[in-house]
Length: 273
Length: 262
Image (cartoon, rainbow over all chains, first blue to last red; front, top):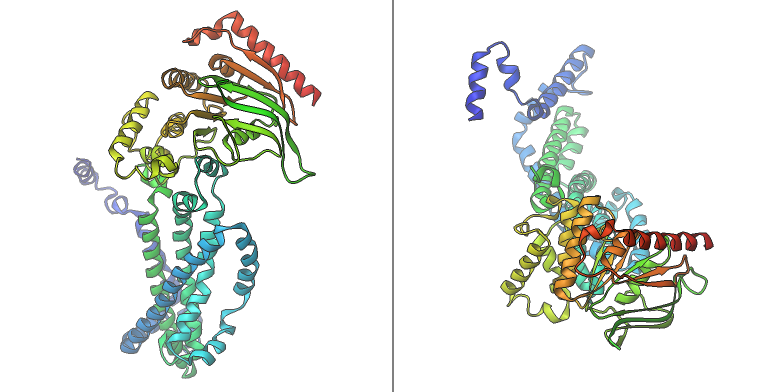
């Protein structure tokens, strides 16, 4: 009904037909992206930049078309190492997070260690991983894992550590064991924290895998970009960056969707309508 | 000798030997089926009393006996409700109410096989508190008063002998509060459950209770015990009688004095 009346009114009042019908909020991400590329193109033209310093978007897109086969192969390789590392991080992060959140002593003991470990730049670990596993896929997967599991651990542990004391009292007064409280309250409660952390973790995983590929691999976007850079093929470097950005956005969107699917009860404002 | 709860000369200190003494020389008895209210200045150890009776805290000296047994671990014959309804947001109201059954030893092994019987019981309770048909709603879809009603159902689902209420109506508006007073009054009359209500609201205490304990400021002990003389069943009208107001006034005076002493 409303759709019919809407079209009827827009037909009756042709003064503002197009502008009113566009959902600006939905269109905004696309418009802003196009605007960024347009601005970039104009800047390159205005400053007369040589493509070896800052290639225009049109050069970058041309490079993507020209080198499509290697770009595609290396993009898949990077996506593969990243998701592998991320998957290990999810399993390990969930397990360690639950373990840490289980008891105050374990929390107190492991937390400083975790922080110290997280403070180490992961790029410094790549040479060690290479000594152990050689160059290629394995160090990239492991770097992605090492860099992305920390936020998962912290978030899961936080979810467990912030159970309301009243809820705990109600259950403990009924004779609940620690395990009961964990299963009935702790774990469901930490799920929104967990799924929220996945969005942070997946983008970090890309950082890890690309760093490792740049330093120690013959495959992947990291390796492709570093060899393109050594040949002064700057448009190809930017093409690699663009592919990384696209993969990152896609995976982030997947995680955000998953979060909404799995923990809809935590997003009550949108569910209530 | 039909005391359901009997507390004898109990001291409870938090945080080791040098910690704060929350209650000291606490002695009180509540009979089976009785409705007792505990009032006192803030910080007088009312919540400590709750935890002592439910076995969440074990006193350093003195004895707490519930249902003929000395309390040394959580007693599962109690139901608890706090000011904060603490409904779990990922469960529907009905699933929230069934939660204690998944914990209490007596029921947890029967739950799966007898689910229908328990759901029926929960729906029956929902109807009593005026939430018929709301079982499938999530807690955040309910108003504060409705959540508190559901909270009462959860406290009662495992048919506890003793119901401990820690200011369950504190966060509600005056009209909802009066409505829930009547709900509690009727539940008490219908189910024969023993109730200990901790509250700041003196009118609430006088309206609901058979017996009122006045606690001193920290460290808490019982200053005085009042019998409430009004006939049951009580109507909300009772609150406009002068004898009712006199009693509230007297309690108010005692608590004001206890505050000054502290």
